[in-house]
Length: 400
Image 1 (cartoon, one colour):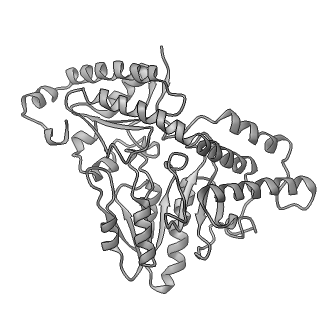
Image 2: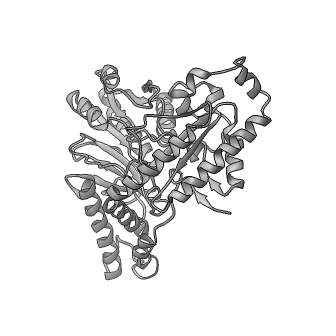
């Protein structure tokens, strides 16, 4: 049986090239970077070399703007809490975000609401895009920060980051973006796009789990994340994950070096799969087809449960998901799909497939051969499907 891994938005396989660059820092250069002797200073140089290279690749002005973290969720938490707690003494107690952010942002906003902050959750339209004018209309005198994700982790829509950044700059409001899904797939330049803070992680781009970063523009004041040591310029105490940091740098560099060729290949496979799946009656693609990550396919099929579809796909050797891996244990429909206006019944019947450069056209052909059979089988088993076909129970306006 063919085995196809189609959940690269959840995590990716560690690249052999990246692993090779990491290995010496597990077994040979294992010194503490805070130590003065040779093996420690060699480790410190590896960290600072990585910081410098990543800063260059993000368009940052200085390596000192890069802070290493344990991953995207930590970076998101730090960006919001660190800025808001710093600015609240100046009366800045308002946050702007969107309704379909990753839960690392949404749950942090809920926590800040308990501390007296007010949050504006912007609507997301049926194309899965935030409107820059909505951001501008929501900005107030007491707005501390705007946080809009670069690309959505479930439906893959790429947001108008440069436009939003320009608006925030004009209004002198800080702008943060969660670029966890976008890094390595989109051309990011924090200067040109007026990004003040940016989160990313290694394991979405064939790097190691447990390593990420937060970019903080020079001059932006942010509260410390962890007390207890001088690491990360006194902002995040704790002995650095040398191998992880080297792996993050290597993975990001590799992704950028191969981005154009890889994206062109993935876009072709993505579009072939979407077009083929849309031939299934009462199916729809979720999110804009143009402003979209090259490797993301998110579909709904009316009359079936997404969980049943995923289990059948697994039996056929296809590993996919119904949305964010961070909410995979939830039986509730995706908050992202609800945010773009889908009713619960349709949102429950979703599946997300995300690919990488190892995905082949034969893999896509196998998926196109398999999914329609599973959808038909599940619909035949459904007591509601006959009612839907007869028009007695239908959400036809949401389905093609």
